[in-house]
Image (cartoon, rainbow, N blue to C red; front, side):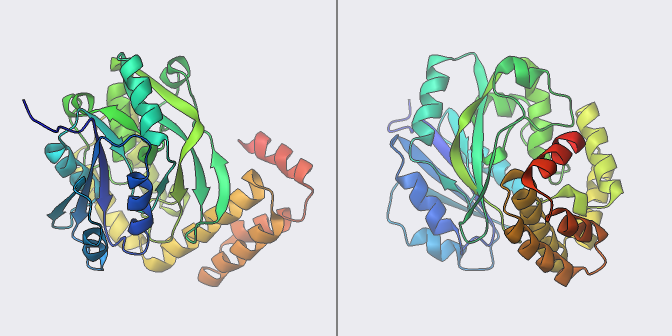
Length: 317
């Protein structure tokens, strides 16, 4: 039997995260639950990510270096090395609330029939400023089991799961670029109970380097492949290659920057009514793409009273 085995593996993939990863690591080390390992899979970073990680002197931090292959392959590598039976997913640019591990671990131990736990999250911009609170599309097992295939039941970096459940489901599929987690949940959902905490357990950072900020900035072909795969709960290698081709063409820095500011603008308009901030971000979008007619429309809508905007939002939703 392995001695000093951690109860939880906090699994963190990292790619060129030098700007944010120190704050992410510190938030894990400050957890009220302390019997964990922080397993960081460096996915071929070319910046100072490794130097920042190595600046921490804590034996619970385990660094695995691998060639760049994407988040799904990095997570699968992490699952191979993880020593704990429970995995807490976490991203290198997010921040854990201090009791996150304690709350999720205690729930899982008290309710062993559950396979996956998630939570609500507070979203922030790249500078760490609060933007909005996101509640998942369901909290109880009954609610989550009734979701259709188009709705992702969990925020990926909030999830806490049994390692065995993920391994038995076939781990993350690298062909499902940008929705490898959603496809995995689809395969697991009917096999055991799941749950989302209504309280926020992490702060999720939105930043222009994020690959999957808003799929509406992707071409229709991407969405067709994604939702067909989710409906069928499988994706072919050929479809995966097509997604990578689209990503190579579309995920340029200016596209990701535009998607970032567009998302902030919508959240300040619909979820956290601050029309001035919405307009500031829409101006940034139009700097990137002055022919983005949706941004002009949102700019006009930002002058409407909050009550009318909320009614419009609920109608469209």
